[in-house]
Length: 116
Length: 109
Image (cartoon, rainbow over all chains, first blue to last red; front, side, top):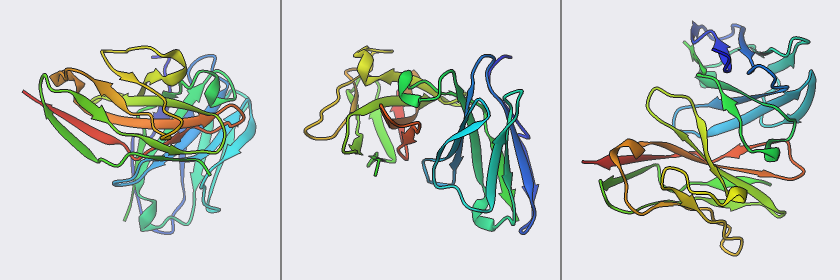
């Protein structure tokens, strides 16, 4: 499958802990986007990287950080976890660095994080 | 600030009935609007974009700048249209794609 892959699919952890979510973009895509979807909430934009550089930042908490590596995969690090961080975290990728170029983001299946 | 509002969390219609999923946006510049769809057990995917003025799976959406709306319409709903629908907004100068909270469409037989 050459689509966007995310690992892990499910993760259960405790408050105060730290986790890392991983995303591999589609082959050839240089942009990676991270979104958070909490219960009854829409997709909240967190951050975007293009070819290793941060391009845009949304409502990302200071406890969260991300990076994109030379091989273009990306990691989202969530630390000092709180109950409210329980959510589905989506990664998406696109060829270009501006979403409006095609508007088409290709999404992964998401990583479901449960904080107990 | 950019914002997308989808006022309905759930829209239930019978097969063959017309469907209109509402989307309103807030943006001071020239927006680019999109509709994404997520079918059961599938990934979120692009359905259509306003700039293409296309009809996909019988769905159309017209950008109304005066009313700041981009409602998704289909004259005759099918059961396979049941899914989550998200309206999204971007702009020429923006790197972000901002999504609404989504509307679940349920088409009953």
